[in-house]
Length: 320
Ligand SMILES: C[S@@+](CC[C@H](N)C(=O)[O-])C[C@H]1O[C@@H](n2cnc3c(N)ncnc32)[C@H](O)[C@@H]1O
Image 1: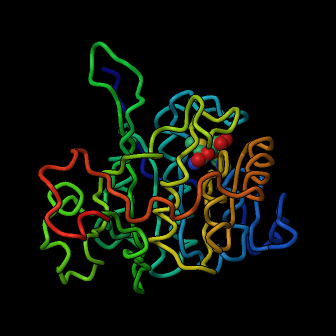
Image 2 (image 1 turned 135 degrees about the horizontal axis):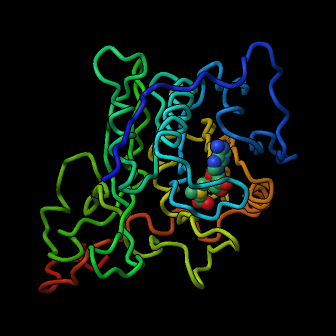
């Protein structure tokens, strides 16, 4: 087994923000200048953006390159492990600094790097950048690659951290789904409960799956050409609804096909996207302008039960 030496140093930011004027966005919606896309390495762009320097970003969603030799157009996705971790810690630190007190950071990451990211964000005692973990969610999909010598990978981690110093945004009621008690068991206790959630509803569990939650592959109507890492719209809808309010500033440092921008813009959030590939940035901007493919809110209140109904409805509410 090769020896792995891991350095935990963060490289010095490549630019000194106060000496360099903020960059002009490469793409900006004319009718809504609040939606902006920048081309470049996020480690260079983030420190130059005024809102980031001022620590005003409300929500950051990051789906970084996984260092698994993926074809990301221009980005070389096969760094030595130490280099990848330095890269990771650098953009994580810049992201934390860009957040407002109480701001939220969500990171979409596979098994290979989840532990390192969690450890870094937790920071240890006394760390200036110590974040609080709210949820370690799993995005579960069923279209994994078949294997013979190990179990099939069918998940990515959705890590949800918040910055201290103020209350974080939590709009749980905006993302409720039907409880199993209603959809499977027709249990009338769920119709009369007083737990703060609407009758028959509950917050989603921390493993995310269901209709329209699969990997965006094949003839999926959301699919964009040349992107094999596109996230489903529903995933971003859940994150953006629960962790931000209309008018808030959402940022994605690894924009890819633009899913975060599409949903943030459609939900009335201000948006900053950063993307290394010029072609991806252009295409994501077109997508942001075009808007989501699926109707927003269409799955709100739907059931994600994995079993069919057991027994028969015993009261009217069960028919809903
Ligand atoms: C996993 S994909 C993001 C997919 C995106 N969430 C979506 O739904 O389409 C990662 C993207 O980050 C871009 N990227 C890689 N390194 C970057 C960097 N240092 N700065 C900005 N973008 C980068 C890649 O070109 C790629 O498009």
